[in-house]
Length: 208
Image (cartoon, rainbow, N blue to C red; front, side):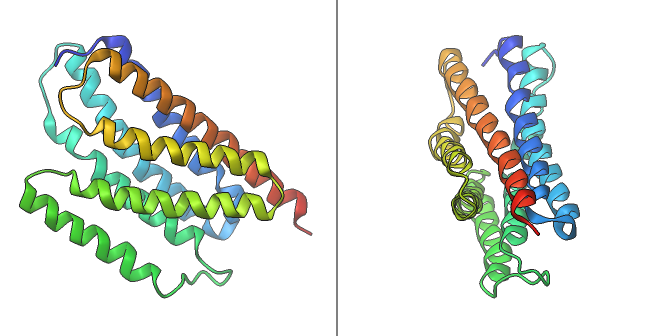
């Protein structure tokens, strides 16, 4: 389909907000895990940018580069998988025993399904699992620190991910529907960025 340039340009906004939010989680995870958090942000950002750049090229009348669009879910899976690993890591840097087989095994299983299906949509499953685990962890962390607003905002972002990701993966969407999806996603990722900032600040306030 033909995308309006304004619609394609707006698609960059939630990507920037998501990357900013993940980077701000470094205030919560601490300096030890900050490099991993930045790597997770880079992977997630690369996934979102690949889809946004593909849409902008199409909107500007350029060639269709489907490989750019197809990078979305593989990169999101890698980024959110790494984020789950970091968020669940202990103070000594070691993650719980169930994390390693999940973070390695689930993407491998979904990648196999993607090859068999000839589509990257099976990787949407692993992306949603890792995003859910990350979101639940952050909601509980915010509640433990008494920051109910941050917990609620993390919940808004997680709810948006559940609703909007399957919708965005559907083919043959109208322009009007995509505007609704993108603006809703922008609001959800803005909530995530604010929540990440508040959680990091709360950690600093309560730390000795």
